[in-house]
Amino acid sequence: MSDKHLRLGVNIDHVATVRNARGGAYPDPLRAAKLAEEAGADGITAHLREDRRHISDADIDGLMEVLSVPLNFEMAATPEMQQIALRHKPHAVCIVPEKREERTTEGGLEVAREENRLAHYIAPLRKAGCRVSIFIAADQRQIEAAHRIGAEVIELHTGAYCDAHAEGRMDDATREMESLREMSTYAHSLGLEVHAGHGLTYDTVQPIAAFPEVRELNIGHFLIGESIFRGLTPAIAEMRRLMDDARG
Image (cartoon, rainbow, N blue to C red; front, side, top):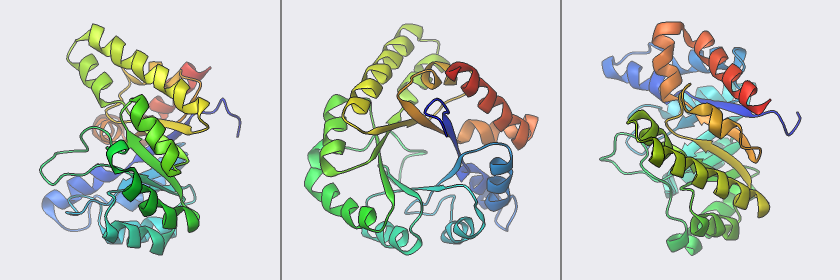
């Protein structure tokens, strides 16, 4: 696949959120993952949280069995999650910050202050063959720390840019976008593969998709919400079209 192709990872967490709101087995995140794959997703992302508020251990088991595209396993840097990742050996693991009281992942991981711990934490994952990604803010200090600990990939948190855009704070949105652009270039210069995600919508995706250094976008909540109105396959197809147009 050419460098020009921008990969789309579809996060299915919130299919599980809807399922868990009522209990039972419907809607099935595995079915959503297969539909996303058929609709053009290059990978599936799932975050197994410590409190299991959406994705479950059984979901991860099932995804590892049924997917033909890579699984990006999002997880906090805890011993429990490390053991689960080492058991499954997914294509990629993305280390994210996690707090019980948050609604969704807030901000990027603090790598610079925890370099030693995180370097030792990711070493067994890399040895097992998992690509290790670190979810961080567009901050030079954090990027340099991620590089030093041996991460192969960083995923830049696009939430501040998307929030500013949604709230009509366009000057702030422009500043956030320029920071993302600058740090994408810088991370790429260090040899890191650059991904981005969090809060991206049809209205915000194209400026980020146009960054030549960005190789993958991970998008979930918006696509699952949009699928209520369009259906999952058309929702993903439209995102894929916008990404391709921006890249072209």
